[in-house]
Amino acid sequence: MTVENEITDFIVGELLGRVRCCGDPLATGQLDSLSIACLLDHLAERYEIDFGDDDIVAENLSNVSALAALVTSKRAHAAARAGAVRP
Image (cartoon, rainbow, N blue to C red; front, top):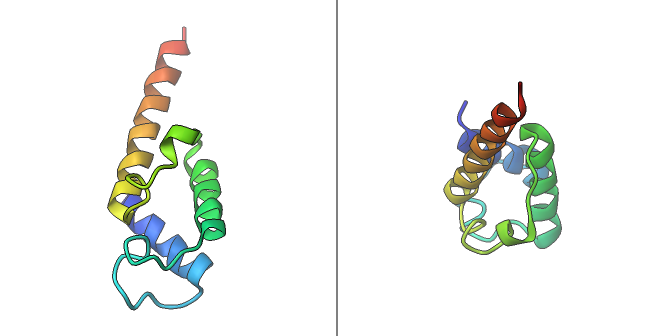
C-alpha cells in the first residue's frame, strides 16, 4: 500500500468515519483543524517522523498527494540521517 493510500484510508476510516464521497478529503476541505492535527500525529507515530512548524503549511496540506510527498521526503531524510549516525 502506498503512503497516499494509507493516508486516505486513515482519514476515511478514523477521522471521517464514513465512505469518502467527494474526492480528495484534504482538497475538498472535509477535515477541520483538529482532524488535521490528529492526522499529523498519526503520521508522525506511524512513520517515525517529526513535523516542524515549517511543514504545517497550506502547500503541504492542500491534498493527499502533497501530504504523502512530505511524508516520503521526511522518511528519506530520517533514513539518511540514521545511516550517517551508524558506525
